Length: 312
Ligand code: PPE
Image (cartoon, rainbow, N blue to C red; front, side, top):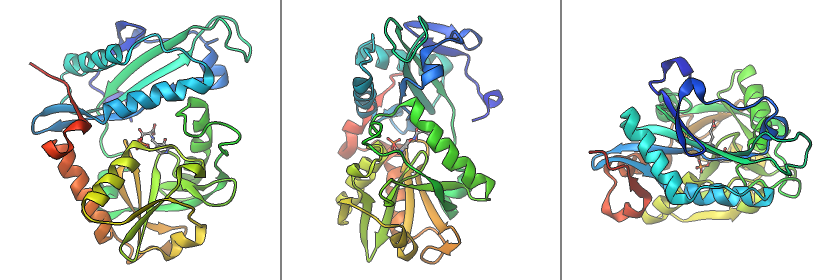
């Protein structure tokens, strides 16, 4: 995201709509020093029925669940956060955008214990195109297996979307890009395939679909869940409770990433190994097309996935 290309001037902070330039925190903010924030990333799509937040309920639910292990009390209700988000989208007149809610321990006393630190909450929205580039959606990307392992869920709750976790994602992603790859795949402590730095990973073999189990120290991705549902609705068998070994990536017919930002992105190479025929595979293409058709049409069949912004 380049901040200069943004056409956004308002951010919601702790109940107020503030100017972009005023949306600041104190340098002794707890979350800055210790990574004690939880956040979400969702998309608002320009559907044929108007702008709509995609799977917003699930994103809000995960935000509140993420706060739990950190004993963080988000001082706003889901309804208030929903209204704030819709109002931000209306005010900036954005037909489609990315939505980033965050809750974090703010400034009071410093020290690892967040005692007496207020929980602060903010929401920003901005236009965000294809996460890994338009070309990536069609032609796929080259990824490397990171030399960094993902933290284990016995070390930190990996199913909570916590800001501090993302230094691991940063290390893995930057290592990949330094080496000429678009993105990384990160193995977990056991050496099984976990996920990307900001994506879940799927494998297609002999017409069936596989994705690592939630017990593999991954984020319970909402796009992962959407794609599983779409695949099953299309008649595919999906194995979402399995371990996947590194070697299985090489021999897969197809691989792809999912994520709110990444949507459905094909993977054409892992390290230097060509996956399938080295382009977007037919199953990936079918799922991707269906995914984009759904977010474009907001069909009745998937009505519960959409929260309309109600622009006048
Ligand atoms: N794993 C990780 C580690 C992750 O960060 C994401 C989302 C996913 C899986 C997919 O989850 P979901 O979005 O619910 O399908 N990554 C977000 C952050 C991207 C960023 O660069 O920041 C996202 O896609 O919004």
